[in-house]
Image 1 (cartoon, rainbow, N blue to C red):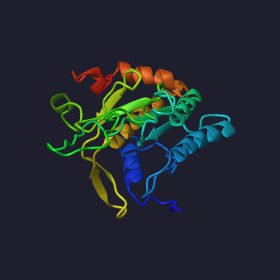
Image 2 (spheres, rainbow, N blue to C red):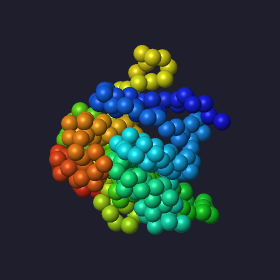
Image 3 (cartoon, rainbow, N blue to C red):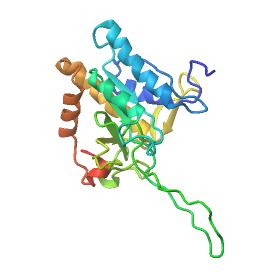
Image 4 (tube, rainbow, N blue to C red):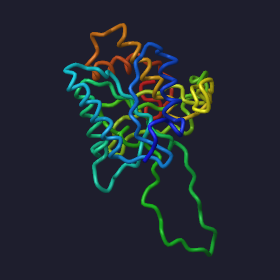
Length: 247
């Protein structure tokens, strides 16, 4: 029931970041979120459509996918990193597409306590402050957030989700600027807004990879090698590996 255009502004903002850094990049839009959010099925379907487009063209039309989104980890039904979203994300990587995913914005939460004499009948089984799905997928590039201009001084954004994954793997993989990032808005053609989140950090990485592939086309279709090169050439911010990834 959602219109095809962006009524929220999130996707427009993310796309604007990519175009600002890598202006020659051709973008494909797959709408999976609206005013009421979205579903895992919609995200999975979008990833499947990318594979389908590439398969039917018999070559890689789409080289990379930016997923500035995340959802709950279904710990009661699947092992960490093996949810349907994660499995489809890994399949997309296996097909030759570089997949960058936001780590999520659950890095800082508070707990409410009950004053003496009161009773609480229900206690949550865990407090989720970690990586969301499909960011837990092993083969994707999971992106956390740093301060926009002084990452060495201020480090990792307080809201950026931290690792490790629920099954003990290192995540996030890398971090990028995600605080008060200026990009396109939806109010008018000249509108620009500042937003914060790992959703804003992720397109920085996607754009950097797009630029890399434009000058090193030999690496198109080799997402594992691209991820390895990216992580080996990051700048160490001197923070914990579970906070900053490779840098």
